[in-house]
Image (cartoon, rainbow, N blue to C red):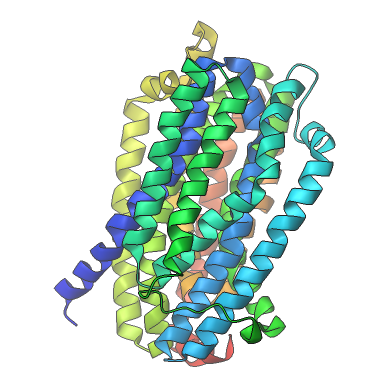
Length: 444
């Protein structure tokens, strides 16, 4: 296969994967914009408080969806369909069990969870109004990313794209109808999100009933022995998605402590802009992952390296474009979510620019973490994820304001990415692809 053929194959996955990830982020962004303009700043604060639980549900879906689908793709490359079916079956069962447990725990303990996440007397009512419906429908938010991952890895990226785009567009329309026409407030926002995700799940889930699907759900192929490998290999995607929840939680508390509620409004704008940034970066990683994993299974070292390089260059180009857009059109980004006061605007512009000054480093960290995952190197992938989402973030979010004043909290994000980047480069230099290809058959 020549270079042009490799690029064409990459583009075959890139276009639908990018559309899928970007449009999936649209319904979250739409909720924020509609709530900010239709409910007000109080609704925006409530949404930002409950957002970590939403991210956690998606993270669970990615844990078993990506963790299982990567191993499934490797098994397909090894021409072992029975193993592929067993991995799919096992992933589905444990994802379903996790969704049920999440709903039960979240529904029973929602109010104390809201308090833990930062809700107070002023924001509790709207937080619970949104959260109760969200927690009751957790199954949908777990299986939206789960089905997307397996459908894409089963050579049907167009189906995954159609599901994501249809569900997201429906969510946009329903958000407007429920919030601005029917005046349903926070209930309308979460109802639109639920319906959009449900349509996504129906479209991707129905794929497994078609003749094009090469995977089969067979209870007798369930193997508890697969669970460890699935969880281990999906841990990086879990952390990447959970990173949103952890970062929002940590920053909410640091911002409330050092800046106040105006800072939460600014951070809500930042965190929702970050969803789009992450969607673009993850779109490239998601596109190249099936190609890398399949060729790892076949033992094709040269093709793995080729697809890795194509994906990395593409991701870097997108990251430079996004950084330029945010730096130049910062005011437009703020007005997209709220009708800001003079204080929010004056403080928000430098905060947004500072926070996103590390986009290029973020790009490399996210992409290489996904690359390690696709080549079944979960330890390296997990280390990158844990440094970004927990270690450096938690320390710097509280350390920077303590050393340099409250507004220094915005410096913590780019500083986290730079420190993680150093570790990422070291891991990449030490990574031995030939050893990886020889060991991967024993990792499933």
